[in-house]
Image 1 (tube, one colour):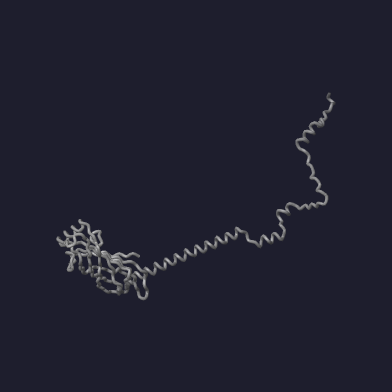
Image 2 (cartoon, helix red, strand yellow):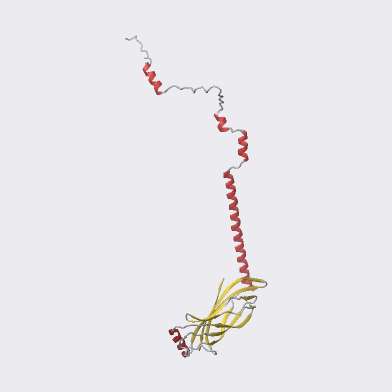
Length: 268
């Protein structure tokens, strides 16, 4: 057995057939039908090298992304420009207002009630017990003082004035329209008329008691549209409101004002 050689055993047909079943051989593509031409182009030429006509067309047309970016940049520029313009306008208005304030030193006009005369307010009358209403007529003398040196005021037509006792409005009317010059004091009268005013029994009793005591509190409200004038420039219209708390000795023609206090405010 020493001189015997060991030779490899050849693969059996069974093993070869099993390998063919696991890895089947490559079947060639069937031939095209007669009259058909097949042109083969390398893959790298298809994916990397488009035709010159298509490449030129692609370059001549900007992409939609680039167009949208340009539109977005334009909108942002317009928005930023508008914000800057508004900011500069606000700064200019603020500077002009500050200069005008320090140069002209504007002041609100002052108002007060100098005199008051009352008719038709006979609370003790019993001639018509079936009709307890009253028709008061107030003649109010108003004093307007403009303390400004270089600013005048135009008083408009849509003004209003009223006289009240507690929460009841007794009469209404309007003020005269005029130009109030700088450093000027103007005194004017206005008639305020009430018609068919019905007072509650408790309010009537309080009014009678106040007259007996010689101290009747009433309130005068003024509301005037005003335009300021500085040189040749006129401002927009603002509403000046004045409220005067008065105390008169009685509700008569020769009523005397015992105390008064007026406050002025402006609605811009």
